[in-house]
Image 1: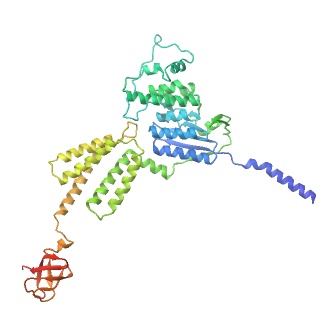
Image 2 (image 1 turned 90 degrees about the vertical axis):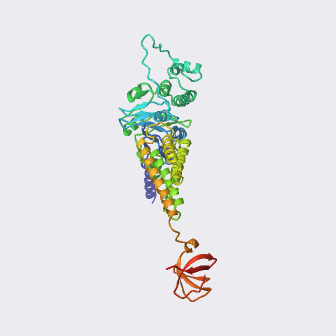
Image 3 (image 1 turned 180 degrees about the vertical axis):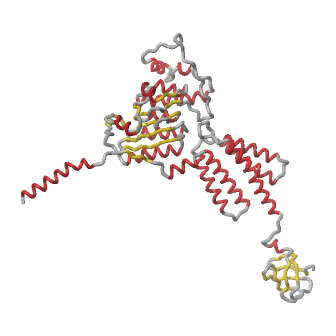
Length: 469
């Protein structure tokens, strides 16, 4: 019996020793961001970081391929990265991808920065407010004019000028005060990120002031990034044993045994990506306005009003996430009002032409940015403008035409209606009009079956006279 108990204890101990071997390794979450940095991608990255933290992930790999995007969405992503309890590796991939403009800021904000061969980053000059002009490229200085390099020269220069690089600022083209404020703010922002992650500060500021770009190999040589990797598995092999600081604590990565978990965009992200497309939001707004207009012009159809209300609410939700010019939105509404008024108040085309001009101008001004992928195409504006004018004029024309149609219901429809007497009478009697029985009053004697015409209505009594044959 004792031998059996000892054997059982030994077996249990052996099983307990083997249990850690079967504990699954913490996953590496791979989140792919392609296209412009927009509200949909910011929401997707934010929820991916929250999910990784909830699942106890070892690392989040943010695979980037973006031409840039909205400043608000970029800052939302960066705030999520800086507050994340899970380290984030920004990886510009696959080969041929880029992390331009907003992508460069995200790369600098990440705990680890990596690029695939054949990729590039940079061109971080802000253009989101009114479309700042691109800086003119300057020729490289010759041997006579090239400044002599000195250790920590850029740092000393920046310290003496309150965080601004005089040499870089002198190369900037002359702009208005607002443009300079925007560029200095962006430069200070990326400088702070570079100092936090101990990356190349001078090149970060040049990316803002001069819109310069770098290839993967050059970025590695200049210490803008930490690694060049062919793909995610190659990156994880290089990261094994890397020590990172997360919220003030050091963490050593063990990526060799980690499992890769790809996070795909869900229906919410895809829907948000569709409706925050400026062209789609523009069309939804117009469908919403036309639907409500048609419903108010012809009460009782229900479907145009329901569809219009839904589309208009979706458009308004998209607009509060996009850089929308409310002056442009007001011009669109004014243009629609003028075009509609032209159908009701003939002005020899003045209202119609003015409405078309206001509508087109508002459409061009609606999205207040020059970022790639955020403009509304000219052909779409022209086509919708013509279609809008034709639609509104036709609907208003139908409404005017319906005013001249005879009334077919209500008391007004009874005046002039022809009925048939149901009994002989010389004063009060019963009459059938439109299939209904009414009390009738006549100043003349009437015979049963005689045709009569209604002249007046007093309460529920019809005043009738003999109908002319």
